[in-house]
Image (cartoon, rainbow, N blue to C red):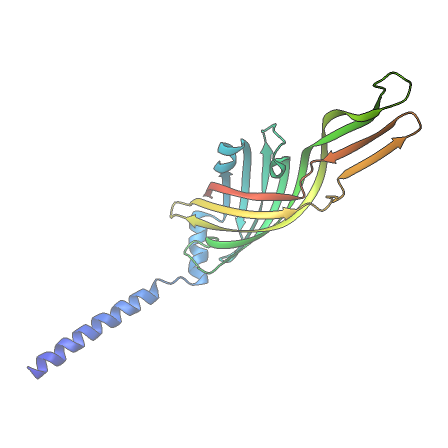
Length: 236
């Protein structure tokens, strides 16, 4: 009975040890990851399906996997939505170079998992300008030639302005890659326009003995820009 117990213990220990060794062996080295990258490709084309469905807009990206932990590329964004009411969606065109750092989990294909991104946007921005013209109107109620009271009469004009700007920013996201080279990712980021002026409300006054009038100009120009979406891509 004692010899049977010892034999059973040795069998269980050997089985557990072999399972532990097998689990260690599935971890990929940098060389193995590079070999897998060569199989599915280190270049990727992707399309943002979120922008197509929501805006609509076309956002096409190109990414080169530099190694297991980093990548770089660029995106081209074309906005077909004519509504400028939403500040963060006032971009009509932008070219967005980026650099990514993949971290936390090292996976088989490289350029996969959680990532942090730094980017810079070269954007063509369209936004509205609200102009209000106010003029003082005197009222002679009893007709004796003296002004009894008055009020400001207003005139409103809306116009559109176009300008170019640059916005550096940062973002975070997550990417998955399957063995066929198809990719799925989501990402969110924010940047700030470098040429944005905080003093967008300008008031000009003009008055004399007969009339008082002034004009206010409000530029509805966004200070920040959003970058992100849900993309499907293919490596080659």
